[in-house]
Length: 281
Image 1 (cartoon, helix red, strand yellow):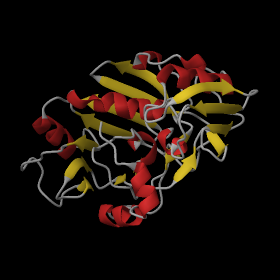
Image 2 (cartoon, one colour):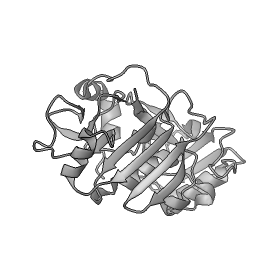
Image 3 (cartoon, one colour):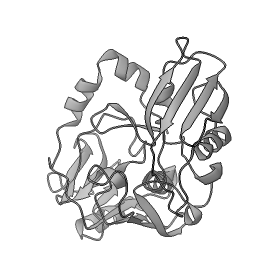
Image 4 (cartoon, one colour):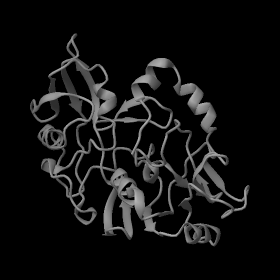
């Protein structure tokens, strides 16, 4: 899916304007607990995007405030020519199968997937928790590129796999999944993001192909959030929360759903982070 050009965004000072345009937090203080239920269409891969965003982490991430921060990486530095980069990984992180995260897992994942937008010559583990990336061409934007949703880290770099077999280090562990139909995941106890992300106890993502039926499910309380990019009267304005706005709606949510401040995007769920960043009030 199309993404906003992060390089332009974070070097031009445009982030603040986009945040203002997207509006403030609906609820300032996230609340833990409950079930967050999403209804999505079959086309567009929204179920898989949101599910993988819940299960997997990346080395870096773009936070809800629009700033780059470490996720599985805690720090990074480059040579002056921006061709050689080292990333220090977070200690004590485990995959959902109980195996510890190592630099070898990160190296295998990035070598298998490649890094979109960067000409990476090699990715090498330096010990257990440090990663070396060597580029064929200088790229000062590498930490931003590693925040893309497709730069997932998996045990031994085993990607892609069916959602039923997905094992990551994300806030949620797969409970059950049916391709193009349904996905359910439960919050991982003691996760390193506890108190920062992963608010709901359970995430349910349901495929409902017909937009009118998705709207009806939202109205009747069967789901909490619905993808409705072209409402055309399906919902009465003012009854629900609209993201990114009521004029340019991509998602509609009930009023008992908390939505954090966000950076503007060209497509809904383009980073797959809704599962860990939205909450039930």
